[in-house]
Structures are given as C-alpha cells and as structure tokens.
Image 1: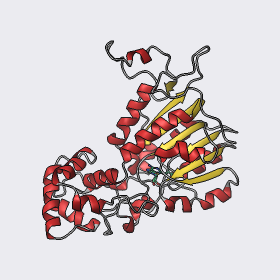
Image 2: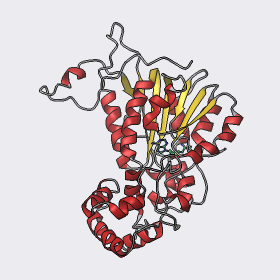
Image 3: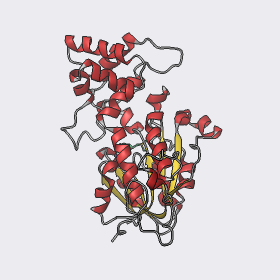
Image 4: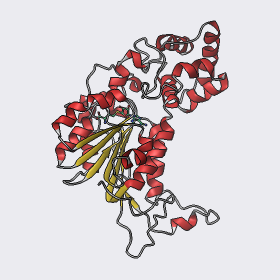
Length: 351
Ligand SMILES: C[S@@+](CC[C@H](N)C(=O)[O-])C[C@H]1O[C@@H](n2cnc3c(N)ncnc32)[C@H](O)[C@@H]1O
C-alpha cells in the first residue's frame, strides 16, 4: 500500500474520488520521530499510509490497531513487505492496553491516532456512512465483529425525539437539530427509515442546501456516526491508555478533524503537561499540580496543513495535529506521575 485514506470528504463537502492521501504525513513523522529498535503503535491503521511511512523511516517494530476488519485484511500486503515488523490487531483503540498486553507489550516509544473514518469506509455504500450513495443505514466501523452494537437505523427509528435532537446537536454540532429530529420522527411514523438516502432526503427537506456547498446532511450524519461508534468515549479511553503505555521519551501524536475530536485531545495534553491552568486552592487536584509534570507538550498550538498540502489535498483543510512526550521521571521521584493516577514506570516491554 503506497498511500493512506484521506477520510473526511464527507465532513468537508469535497468529492471522494477513491484517492487515499495521508494527511499531515510529514508532520506526523516529525512529531513521532521513530527510531531504530523502537516499538510503536498506529492505533488507526486505516489504509496503512501512516504505518508504511513509519516502517520505512527506520528499523522499528509497529503494532497497528483498527476496529474495522476490512482495514486489517487490507494490511496483509504491508505485513508481507515488512516481515516480522508489522503486527495487525483488530479491535478498538480504547482497549489498547489489553490488546497489546495479549501480545506481551506493555511499553511503547510512540503512539499515533489519526481519528475519524477512512475513505474506504465512506466509499462503500453498504457500510452506511455515506449520504452521497444510498445504502443501509448502518455506520458501525466494526459491523462484522459486533452485531449487537446498535446501528444508525436503530438510533434514528427508536430514540425519543429529544435524545435524537441531542445527538445531532452535541455530536453533529447541528443548530437545526430540533427541527431535524422532529422531521425524522414524523417520517419514521410513516415507515421506518432504513437507508442513508431516505435519511438524507428527510434532512434536506428541513435544511435546503446553502451557498457553502456542504451537504445539509453532513453534520447529522457525523453526529449519528459518532454516537454509533462511541467515538468520544473511545478517544478518551485511548488517550489515557496511550499516556500509560509511553516509555520515557515516548511520544503521542494525534490528528483530529473537527473540534469535537480535537477538544478532548487538547484538554488531555494540556493537563498531562501541567499547562491546563492552575486549579483553585480549594480544589484537591491542586496537590497534584505541585508535582512535576510527567509530559511535555511538543505542539503549543495545533499543527495545520501547509499551503502545498492544501493545494494538493483540499480535504486536509480541517486537520490538526497535537503531540506530547513523556519525560524521564525526576531523580528521586516516588514513581507516580502526578497525573490521573497513572504509573510513571511503564509496564514491562515486549517479550
Ligand atoms: C482516518 S483513518 C486512518 C488513516 C490512516 N492513518 C492511514 O494513513 O491510512 C481512521 C481509521 O481508524 C479506525 N478507527 C476509528 N475509530 C477506531 C477505534 N475506536 N478503534 C480502532 N480503530 C478505529 C477506522 O476504522 C479507520 O480505519
């Protein structure tokens, strides 16, 4: 695989051509700084573009997770190109501690997260992510491995109107959430909404296209997708786990595509690096603030794509990268982070 998925056409309104362009690839590599002998995790394998770049940059070992079995299956060719160096794991990145422990790995030199969905997923109508092509209203990233997980159709047809509006507002940042939820409830009373096409039609009847060129269904589809896959919960679990896995000098690099994804990343990194603003003296966390931070921020501001990348790949325009590095424990420290109760000494390394 020589390129990676560029996943966000639908959230930016751009057209997906089937091209797979890794986003902020050079910036990701610079922030991760992989080195010979290191052990890394690509927690969002996708099309394998980041994985290929990391494996080509040095003689390291790479574990790669994706919750989508199709992504893991596509990775077989890359595994063969880098014998013994790429280990693919199907599962959720929120479970990375257990997934890696099953492979005898308890410490890492770096973790990369490239959030969202891949264009492989968006481009297959059968996966139900797309409002451009009609398909079953599914949206589960791991549809084959978790048949019990509710689909987007389950939410759209069964959530109370108020809860549906909350999903669209909070996870889709859709200002017309209430009107759209009302229209969905009226439409489902006539017949269940089972396809992406019908849902998009119901939304477009409420919100006619505006001059931005962004499809009116974009934000609602994003909200449903994020709820179906518990994307914010996954991000929060992954950040905590990654911080715990990083060895001294190890780096966490996260690429987000919209503010809802970026917000928990920004907050987590600022808190980990002790730059989140001092808590009040009445707040018991003030005690923790007195211990030296276990991490340092590598990106004071989010790194954005440069003009050349934007010209070559306009879909990258909302990408932002943040990175964090675990510091060596201070001499004589008691061995605790002072951050969220994580152990300062990473667990054992690969066996
Ligand atoms: C934007 S793509 C990654 C693209 C990749 N960096 C590349 O270069 O090809 C995001 C991938 O993350 C996967 N993903 C999203 N949430 C996940 C989760 N909670 N656990 C594991 N994989 C997840 C998706 O299935 C998708 O394949």
